[in-house]
Image 1 (cartoon, rainbow, N blue to C red):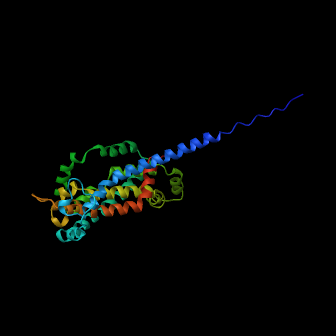
Image 2 (tube, rainbow, N blue to C red; image 1 turned 30 degrees about the horizontal axis):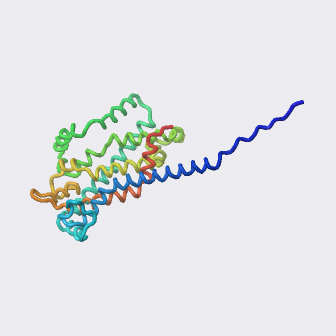
Length: 295
């Protein structure tokens, strides 16, 4: 006669052990947040010092020990910097260069990346590797030939020199191609069957799906162009063409430096970048996280 046997239910995890695991998890989370807050504080400390220094007198900026809070608060620094410099001209030139270069790099980078990612032609992979390999070549190795070339074209000492030299970027092509590779090929194939041209596929299908990558490239290019010092220093000699990075150097004379005004100008130069980053940080993080995914 067959007997029916029932498996005994496994014993549940004892409550003390569950409580211990929960406590360890909570402690680990608290430690992680403390470490992250400490790291963020260390990173933000120089920016805090820059902002407070912009409200000090010139002699208080580099006092020993460090005076973290200004006493008295010199709000007039933000008025004097406009009176003692061509700040509006510097900001205007920097904005023109940053917007123009960013637009051109996003346009050319995304368009070239579409060709490398979604089109098939002989030597595509070799050409892409050769193009990306130019990232490893330091700019100092070819800045003299570039300067000679711009001088022969009559673009030296004009904003067009910076725009022409930075209209293309291998990094932008690489970033956009990595994101395009994550877009299913079936979408492009279906569009070709419907009769769309390659340009229409890029403009109407692929580019709208690449918002995070476009935002990432836009932010990185804008920040790099805004903060560029050596390029404008080489090509822009007239005072009315200077960018803010070159202009701040005018506060350093042979015998003295107006450090308070330098810090004030630095705060003004950082504000546009901070605003743009706060507006697009969600897309920036998403673009960085997904640019390396394929399939």
